[in-house]
Image (cartoon, rainbow, N blue to C red):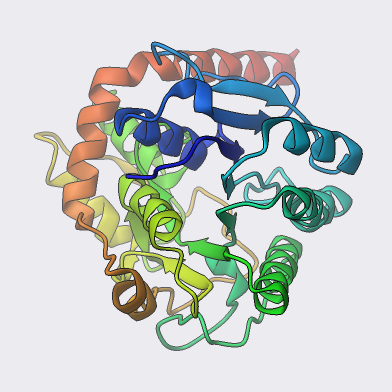
Length: 332
């Protein structure tokens, strides 16, 4: 359990961030000690069921003066930096990708350095590695093949430079394919599980595409392990399961949770310009340095996710309403 007076979480209303907020509160952290930064008019649907919300600040990370003023006022001990842009197909504005992911990280870290802190954790991406033919290890040379990955590499390297040059507790976690509670319904696993619950056809890409899928609660536990242990000689950690699964593997595993057939429509989703043949985390650093490893297999994570979606399917009603409205507008 983290012992800190003040925690700052950027992207705290997002998928991973909201799960982190909930876990901190579940562990006994006072919600009034948790500050989250969101964009203006962010939908807080992932947090609204909390009995008490954390303190919410609407702030643009590109605004250094604003970030500096906020950090000086709240003086966070632990910073979880999860805000990002570019991880979804419709987030393709190049300037915004670099401003949010790189400049935003530089601004936040520089502001936090002025006040001092116990731990700063940046969120990178497994896409930083690029094309490899073996399990992905933190010491590998990054070979990014997208603007988003380039921006994430730049942020990771800046954080590493700062940690080494100034001997500061600054770390980067590289999540792989995270799934679980509160994920956007357009992603693979929510599409499978919600489609299965509603007996609807599920649009899929190609069966042989591979990823390393990690249950969100396992990734959250990695963030907390880094914040608690703050190692002195390792600064980048993979957030993966260590198991590579194809989309067909995921469909087959999910199928075992239903009494009726899941109706997948293959090749109905546009693939990325490139698809890896190997995409799996080497978890040895996290295990040896932090004594951390994921607790859930894909089957266990999908089972927990299905139970959660079954009990919280109503949260996704507004996405259906939005989709229908967009379809109506497109036909008008």
